[in-house]
Image (cartoon, rainbow, N blue to C red; front, side):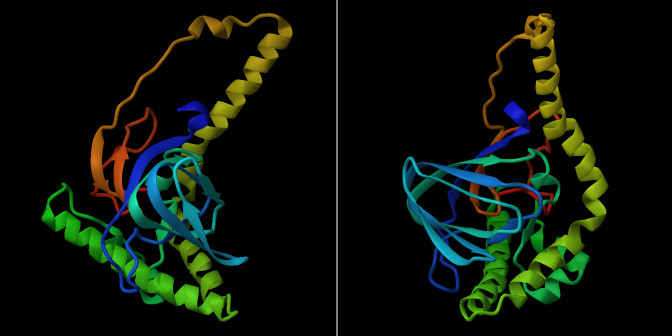
Length: 246
């Protein structure tokens, strides 16, 4: 994709959570900004950040985006359909997304991985596991939100630190993905500008067109049912990884 941007299509889960809201699994991204482009239906995205709790309405034509460290929860309002644009394509699938599980789960990397993972496939067992994962993330999210609304940002900031500790060992692999993806895309633009300035745009001889279609439809992502693509250099779609992006 242009600029090494990741792309998927989402429809939030219609499963009711403990607070009576239907939607996905709250989580944050540590190094990626994410954008929702609404293509159909109605809903919202609930966010937690240093500026507090927000409930952002989503309707056709609206765009919402959030920067690294923002906890977000996609909420179903009726046939909501969203195209997701993700900075640093490949990094979310490599572990950049961390779910808002309770502190005791976040404190143990093995327990976190077990709670976040889904079995392969798309059958009833996978659906049940995805719902359990969502419910556990909502449990942690509601505690974070309650504290923020009461003026206490301590639990939210501790969640951010716990998420950072969970992924620290993955940073070298992420850096390699970033260098081969987003950083390389920016460098190519610089080289193309240099070529234009020199009057030698030989790179234009490589002009071509591409087409892609989803390789998996209705997979169980963090936010909801997810249509996924397999981009060159990106992570392969699949439920087996505990880090399956949004």
